[in-house]
Amino acid sequence: MELDVVVVGAGAVGLAAARALSLAGRQVMVLEAAQAIGSGISSRNSEVIHAGIYYPQGSLKARLCVAGRRALYAFCERHGVAHRRCGKLIVATEPDQVAALDGVAARARANGVEGLQLLDEREAQRLEPALRAQAALLSTATGIFDTHADMLALLGDAASRGAELALGVNVTGLVREPNGWGLLIEGESQPVACARMVVNAAGLGAQALASRTEGLPAEHRPPLYYAKGSYFVLQGRSPFGHLIYPLPEPGGLGVHLTLDLGGGARFGPDVEWVDVPTYDVDPRRAQRFYGAVRAYWPALPDAGLQPGYAGVRPKLSGSGADRDFEISGPADHGMPGLVNLFGVESPGLTASLAIGEHVADLLSA
Image (tube, rainbow, N blue to C red; front, side, top):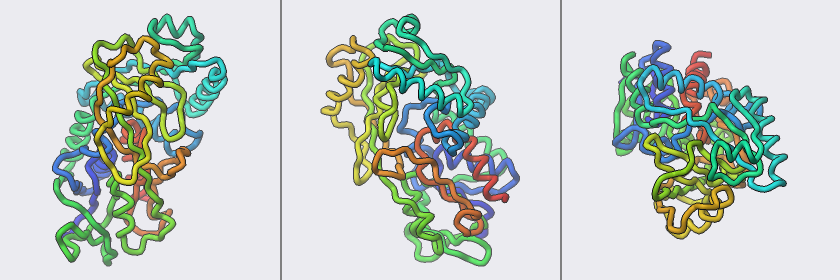
């Protein structure tokens, strides 16, 4: 079988890449190992539309998050994807954190984030009376959305231009062939198809596929570290109308409060380094959550948290240091017709449309 472009992975990023390539006139086949789209990283997160606040100026995360967030709001409006610009508050709960909050605001403005306002204690409590904070940074560009509906819309756009989806197909390796890449599929000893171009958007499996890509230099196969994050769900009604975030911590954004479109509240994720992905939530982890949440919401009731769900983030560093997305194309690794996406964690969902355009540009260069 001769194919034009194969996208490996039907999460939000893979589907956005398929959409962008289809809109550019390519014939695209999306191959997904699971039996449903978006069942990995894309379905185990906070469903937040990030403004682009935290990331180093000029990084892929900063540029693609800001561009992707603007595109995502317009995409949701156009396709009827449920979403809400609820805004968020990043809070300094102690006096010695206020200066750090100023630094977060400066980085956000350098990234081109609009809708920012520094609030003192009185202003923050006027917005959220239940909040305890010395100061806060208000981001009006932050929101929430229905990620599954978004992925269905991405797939619909791609399919309208001829893209196809095959579920339950596990691509285990790539071999060089004269006209592109031979696709090794689980259960088959020889390539079953040849694709002129391949996009490796396999999420937690991206490094494994890269390690079985014939000729790919070792320096373009970064290590993978699993950062598990557990969520706990609030029992009862939330007193907050905004998302509430503490200052960032190594490996993540701290135990924050997010809202769903039905008005429910959840807390997380925390950071737990694991050797293999697991998705159980240990109820004992709630003790740390109570302490972290009561730093900004002292009235959190006892027994107010119940285990929710867990996700695993594909980190490129095991130290907790923030690493940029690694999106490499032919100009980087020297392999024609191949794009690899590594370490696409938060804000990958927000940035997905911009990531898709970036992938299409790398393959057209």
